[in-house]
Image (cartoon, helix red, strand yellow):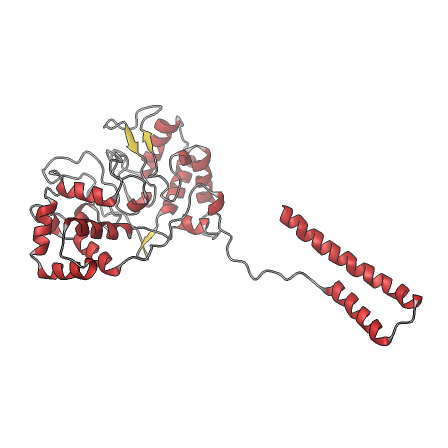
Length: 347
């Protein structure tokens, strides 16, 4: 406001000055005889002051909205060592990282679809049912903790735990390193990327380097945050306003729209019947593609999840129109991986 007032005042003062100079010019000429060159100079000054305008700014770019909102857009992937990135991507799909050579990281985290499991009901390596719905690997690097219980702080520690968990990959880092060292091509790639043969540290670093690249910028909502006012419809913006005004934004904000705090599930009424009572708030990035929902996978659709969350966490009963608006907003959170929109896994 102060800047605008100053600009207006500046323009007004320049206009008043020009008018004063122009009106004073005849009196000055009558008061004394001026040489012709002085009269020309005075006329030039008066004309210049009257016509001078403040330079205008060049055509403006879209004004970012993100600074005014509790959600920030996902940035473009940061540059990284291409050799380490390629090696990590190869390891992510390598079944030699499991004990029996049947599973890879990509078996549970399908990056060709939604970064989660192809199956809604995951069966673990030991034949038991998985206690938690598989979280997407997309944008995991942007969360402050990993897994539903938030018990891992780094991608490296989470990867090592998954590899050595008897119910998952059921192997050991020693066995993995031995298998990779038996492959001359893998040894060559590790030496090129790390300057040494495969070992525990560089195997985990390569996996983490690849996982850090699995972010999905460019959602329609992020484009709106960046200033593209045509990216969202009125209905989708209405859903976002409900999302904020009803309190969903209290737990789902920041760059990952969640993933940055813990919360007790079932505050006002039961949400799910499976433990634990406190979970890490999941990211809502690409949420329209990652059914089923909740840590037990008990909500089959986004509409069902929205209704249950509102009742259990906010003590609200939503109308059909409110559910429709909220789901419309959530569908704008789907980003792109390598320029291709994230999509749901096939039924």
